[in-house]
Length: 452
Image 1 (tube, rainbow, N blue to C red):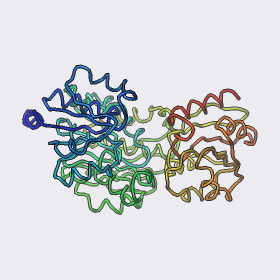
Image 2: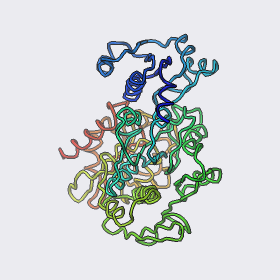
Image 3: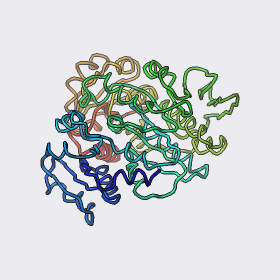
Image 4: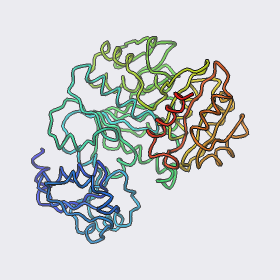
């Protein structure tokens, strides 16, 4: 099958749009398969110097600092990087001219033979993807983990390394230009408002996410969150076999929480995992563990090894990470909580909270946080651009204060939080107003807490 696809790439004019990590890997892969490759990016040569070094030794044409409409229209195939919006005028014209436009995951999946688990959702993708990779490895499968985290899928195709399982975190952006992409197991963890700076409406964002299921058949599985009404509303239309997970309801077929035990039921078989000793904190992580177990047990993993591995899994960086205890107050860093849905899960995990939130506003409503802020947040400290809108929507619900910088917020939180309380930095916003990225925001918070 691969040689037939390779022949389709040989001698073809292919345009790669966007020169981040994914675009660079696509350009190298296509050039090595005999395609005539052009790369284009609105950034100029000087700001791309480091990236362009990755293309040394390949014959690749560069159109930098501009997009040439003629190149878009005369290409045989266009491969779009996830960061490039669908509304790019040159893409719209090329699509109208009948040029085939695909995403990197679509290109890569045509060269990947191993069974694939693909995970999407607004929150929990990275943790769930990482746990699934660990479970497969513990069960002795040669496994590639990548996609929206770590290495792009195309790097697996490029390396040609033999693997038995592929685990891919998939964002809505990556699903925008698929045509045949078909995972053996696709998981949708949850849906809440996000990326409204990219999509015209919440509905459009949901439709992008749901595309992960569109090419599946009755031989495949759809792992879905039975507690998320929005997810279940759409699940009835999927062609794959539904395998739900639930923290709240007992299921005849699926995986669910009963008292302090995770119960797995499939085709008349039942397995149980006591949750005592699970290292991951927070209710959302029980959902992530259940989703990961569902995906892996459906693809040949053994319950005993898988349960042991899931129980011992440690938290990922910047996801509800415990920093330290000072004067009877626990400090947690949750910098990767860049939307309202992930902050909801964080707030469900504690009471008596001093919440540090704010950053660059992404356009969604903060209203879903209102009941939890009223019930669990004793002090709300706001930073960054979004603080004005957050104060309008949430400020009246609890003691609310502003801080100029993250460091000021930490000092203020230390002063006003009583022993037994929890300080949680869970921003509900992206970081680009004050920081390079969420990791820098995390590092600055941790440094400030350690300096107390």
